[in-house]
Image (cartoon, rainbow, N blue to C red; front, side, top):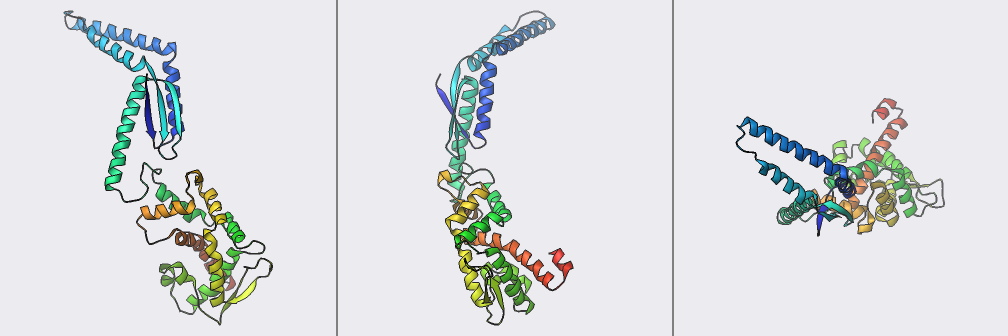
Length: 316
């Protein structure tokens, strides 16, 4: 008898297994025996109730109504189609009791349609609950902050800059330790300003007097010495490759992004930032901050170690 569609915004595979289990249970003779026993108990209860009421009448119509409802909802079977609202994947379950299929299909379609309508009317132009998983925005932003410092990201970034002896992580560590923190030591910028300014403005130190060593050459394992001004240009150019396909692929794998839908880590990150109202922040800027913030603390600890202040280094 016909078929019903259920829109799933949860785990469609789990819902499929539930319907398969219902179909198996209701399709056995044991289920019918259980219902028959229930029907018999119902008749006995009606008879006992009639005795206590003076044995004037036996309300068998109540049992009859229950039997009719059972026959209608669990007699015929139908096919239920489960559609994943996010991936579009369709799962088909046959021989589902029509009562279960009807209730699930009607409730699902009414709820999904109303939700979609309200999101269109009241939502900003960002992914909604019918298009993305619940709390996916916050989860993705937090995952980027926690995982962007992964070794795989830096390995991909080194490859994007030519590979070989390129070591962007070590280069940033040196630059922050020997240039950025020197700027703070010289009182050219306070720590409060460093934490509140944009990434580039906070980390850059324009100085021809102070310098550092960067490892951005594919053929030279010893690196090269730069002034802080020239070093900033070199390290910024290397970091700009965060948007390269190699790095994006590493992020896709790290964050578990399903690329079959045409999305990648950067597009999903852009959508998440828009959903949070941070329309002026680009995905690359957010990613750069997520990568460099842990590097700053690592470099600060190294700076204190250089000064033999091991207590402060341990606290950082």
